[in-house]
Image (cartoon, rainbow, N blue to C red; front, side):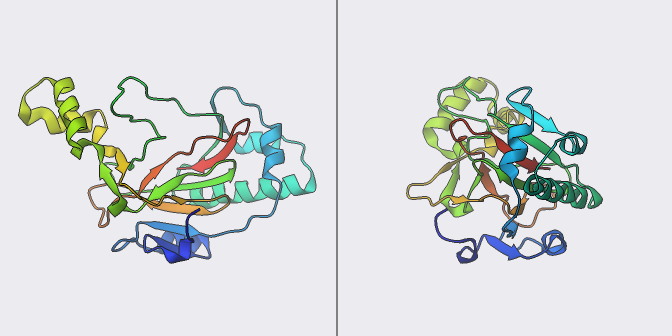
Length: 232
């Protein structure tokens, strides 16, 4: 992590789930962090879960079936409580055991996978919530330290050649294939790592959004280590 959360205008720190839910984005602030120092053995949980694919969704029932030490049970209780809080709020939390995400290698001049800095988009007013319990954690970038890839001249020209259609349909083409959601860090950009154990709310691009959406990316996984990620 470069710097601290409290030093950054982009991040609002809170100390409860209620504050996380009720704090509204404003100005440059487009992320809210329920900063936590979690107690429990989350690595034990990861070691006892079965990875069925590169990404395996873990249900509450899967967690409850694990035979755990006292420290592992403490970690499980935290995860189950987070899932219940988000569910009660109306969200649909998904707990994922991750080896890796799928890579986008179709085009050599632009990447549109989750390892690329990007923003989330929704047709309705919503937020993205996420918490990394174990493994590498996601990064965010201040919006003024990132540029839309479609605005970089050499990338834009290659996308126009790929489109090979009427000029008035080009912007729709960029949205249809999600090219407009992806960003490139500017020189000397300072990513902020979201860390382990904190529950984050990040701004999404939607019609009622009053702030810029949060630019973020999935991390490169640590060698030989799975991630345990709650997201919705």
